[in-house]
Length: 222
Image (cartoon, rainbow, N blue to C red; front, top):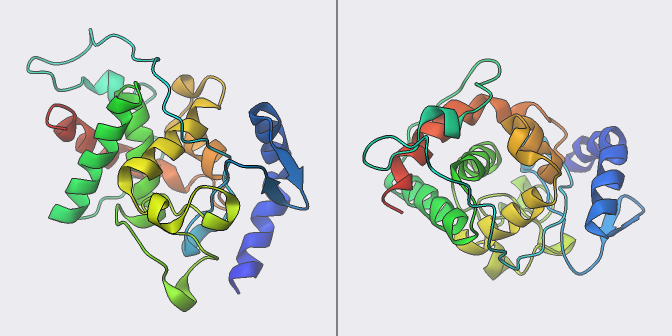
């Protein structure tokens, strides 16, 4: 059944995957990514085969913070520069999930990226795992997807230990994001989809408002 849900993603996104992977310098072979780095997968509810991501941290793209509010909290126009798209969803956040938000924000800063990148990462994780650092879910698992971003060891994202480490997983996701031309100017769901290549490309949009609030709260404390 999971395989049946995965096939549409392969069919519908083959052109996008080929074009993005071509930029990344990876080989597209038989519907899978071949190469030492990259490609993940969405969780059971929306399977897909994401774009690649090397985990080497690159410094740069920091941007200024002229739009920050007094006290260092990012302004709304930095967090959501294009406004939210469609209806928005929210979930209650546990202490563990809040810690994962802080880990994502901290890894984003360490990678030299700004608040917008953190919002995209948090929004993606909200859709993929509800900000839970998931291990293998057995019969309910979508292939071997695990962690905050449902990355797949078999697709080159890293070992199970690595992709279930929030800092490593976030850094890998952000590396994939940086390979997307003009990601800073894209709506969240478009930027996330170019990395994750989900069978449900619009699913990320509904988390943008909560992701922005979570990043705003965590930015100055992470």
